[in-house]
Length: 176
Figure (cartoon, rainbow, N blue to C red):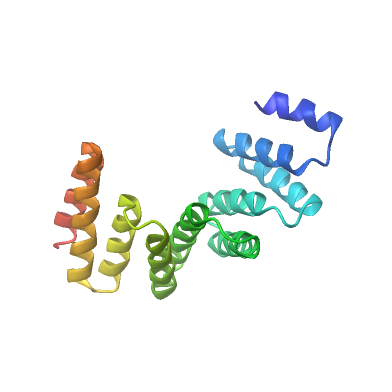
């Protein structure tokens, strides 16, 4: 894929979609600096591409550049909301931004973002789990247990026994 996108960029070096696609391919192969370079180039060509900011935010999250990830996720959300919204996409971005904030110990910001993600996509097991972790960090043990149990139940309904068992293990480890 990287070779194909590189050939396409030889023909049209300023195509933000191709840059984003190659960025994603580099990210998938853990070539993070090359991925960031393509995202940067793409966002210079098209500063209104929410996909490029989302991709770069995901890379920065992986690199533990949490402030940079938050900036990119926020920019991506602004662009989506200005275009009329996309609840599924927004939910994912709020969830990712919540992770970045959690890693910076901005627990209230992380909780606000994960609540927004769950408002947009209420039955997401991984977001319920994430909210449980945030609530546990805020010493809301009852809320944490409730979210963790909902997460476990959802995973079980989906047939994901490994995730179900992982959530139950976390509940036990946290003493919930």
